[in-house]
Image (cartoon, rainbow, N blue to C red; front, side, top):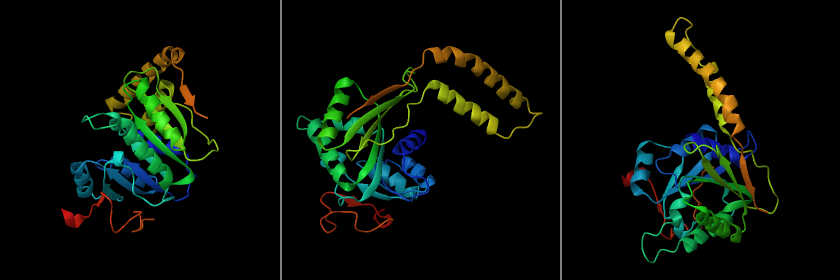
Length: 259
């Protein structure tokens, strides 16, 4: 998952050091697979019973929990080294019923997340915001919980490729934040993919790939003039993950025997 890989990059974890990562809105486990590929142990939480069922069938490596993020998290303090969330956070601001209060649900999530993360750790939320008011509400609730709020926008001038990443640091010390990605970076990555692929010189498709690269090189100079990065900055597995293991308090552990 490209967005999960980018979120892991933004975590800026120390290389070759083990970490226990929380995946919020893990769904069928695609983002969890990226965590596994990077060598991290992870635990996923999702509200969708059917999506978690798919994750169980796919035999993902992480632990899975069924829970509504808007009700808060039920893990012990300082359990996780980091947290990622892909395309989930915006749904907490939607009102399905008249009794739904987005601000209250966001506060439940961020307050409990701040507690279960180790101090100095980081959470990355990739999302698709509907408007500026939604981002203001999210930033307000996150900072009230104690997080240092930052945000970067990858590919800001592309209507299709644009991606928003919220960076929450659980500590007063500002940490390194990678720069936003631009279309130039994306084009360079695609060129590297073409160059690293093993090709047959006699295959006509090889010639087509080379022509595509030449065409893209000509387009790059035009795109670069209109591209700027946008940055906003605000000032191993254990059985004892739950704060109240006996009660579980609304959170159900997924096990193969339940299926």
